[in-house]
Image (cartoon, rainbow over the protein chains, first blue to last red):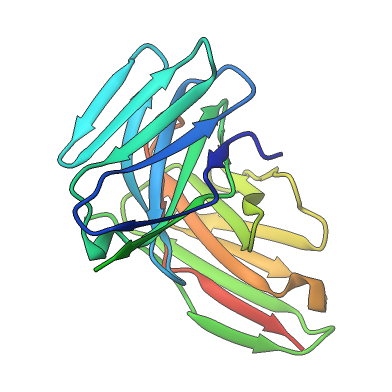
Length: 109
Length: 112
């Protein structure tokens, strides 16, 4: 079952700009995680935010979580060409991670 | 560094063949997962295992089975491959249920 839904499905911005992706989910969660996937590769974990946290930072990444709205956002500041990838949110419920379909981010030089 | 290794990056098999996809992790993780990824559908869980010899069905187990005889190895088996099983298969592991998952590089399987 697909719980997370990322928005937008695709995003194309200029290098140096900020990129914001959103994720909505349906049920209560233990935590929410963001992953990056470069073309044709496995996923790499970026950041985990627990259900009792509202904001978390890691380098150029900033994640917010609003449990009342069942939504999260991922902000990448000062984007670089190497940030071109697909980004997925996953919500943790019991044993499983439940995934959205992802946002495809393209950084134009 | 945690390493999750899948036995093949690319695989081409014929319809009706029995296919084995192997996954090995080197960090003594209890939990292991098999997903398939198709365009526009995100990751869908096929099976997962939270201990040796234990397995649980995910969202799309039909046509698949799994084996976990040793803690580090989780195998996905396609009993009789069909063309609708052409997909990217991703293996992952995690130490407990509330931490991040580590992924292998993926196996792109084509069934002809």
